[in-house]
Image (cartoon, rainbow, N blue to C red):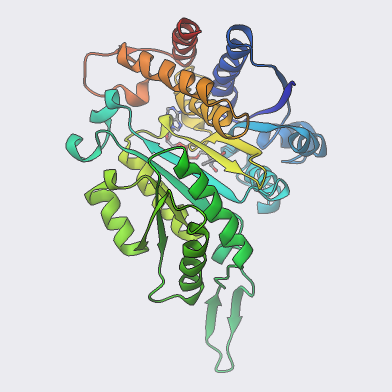
Length: 362
Ligand code: NAD
C-alpha cells in the first residue's frame, strides 16, 4: 500500500537539502520498489510570506494525514522582527504538539571516515554510535504553574514546575527499550533521582517498564555524571533515555562528539511510530542559496524515516551505506572538508553521489 510523505522544505538551505533527500526517496521508488506518494507544503517563513501563518491549516492537515513528515529547517533574519507568536519556529513547535510527537530520537553516529572532524581524540570517538531518546512534550518545559511573580516583600522570583505523569514516562521508556532491541540492547536512563522527586519517580517507572524487556540491559546515571561520561568515554553508551530538559542539553553535547552539524538526523515520533524527520541543524541563512550546504543530515533523516515509520530497515541500511560510500570515496561538502586530501563537492553533487552509490546497491 502506498505511503504518503509530507515534504516541508521550509526556509534558508531547507529547500536545497530537502531536494536532495527527495531524489533519494524517488530513487527508492524507482529502484527498490518502495511505494510512496510525496506531497509538498509550506512551513515557517516561506509559509508566512505566502499565507501570513507559519503553520497554515493545509500544511497541518497534510502532516496529520501523512504517514511521515520530512522537514528541512525553518527561520531566518527576515522574520526575526515578527512577534514571537508569528515567527517561523512556531510552525515547527505547532507541528510537534499537534502531531503529539513526544519522543525525540537523536543518533550521534560517527562515520569512521569523519573521525578527524571531531574535537575529541580519535580513539575516544571512533566507532561512536549513541541514540539519545529525549522526552519532548512534557517535563519542566511544559509544567505548570510557571512564570515570574512578585513576593509579599516586593522581591521577584521566577518559577517552573518539573512534573511527569506515569503514562508519559512509560511511553518514552518503551520507545527507548524498543529502539535498544534493534541495536546493542542496552538502555541508560539519565535522571537526577538523588535531588528531584520527579526524576526519582522517573527512575522507578523506567525500572518497572524495563521488566517487560528482560533482554535489554538497563542502567541509570545522574545527569551530571552522564555529561561527564559522554565526554570521557562516550562509546560505553548504546541508547540513553532522559527527560525533556536533560535530553535537550545532552543531545547537543553528544552531537558535537561527531564533529559536524551537517551530518546529524533526528526523528520525533508519536505513539504509533508516525514521525517527523529533520536534520538537527537550522536554516543556515549564511550559506542559503549557494549550493554549498551538506545534504547528508537530511538524507540520513530519510534513513530514520525508513527505519521507524515505514518499517523498511533494509532500505534504511542501504541509504546509510550509500552515504558511507561517498564519504569513503573522499567526497566532502565544505563543512566536513577538514584538512585531508578530499574532493570538495556542492550540495547537489553530494546528493547525486549518494544516488549513484544507492543505485549500485539495488
Ligand atoms: P544553523 O544550524 O542554521 O547554523 C549554524 C552554523 O552551521 C552556520 O554556520 C551554518 O552555515 C552551519 N550549517 C548548518 N547546517 C549546515 C549544513 N547542512 N551544511 C553546512 N553548514 C551548515 O543555526 P543558527 O545559525 O543558529 O540558526 C539559523 C536559523 O535557523 C535561525 O532562524 C534559527 O531559529 C533556525 N533554526 C531552525 C531549526 C529547525 O528548523 N529545526 C533548528 C535550529 C535553528
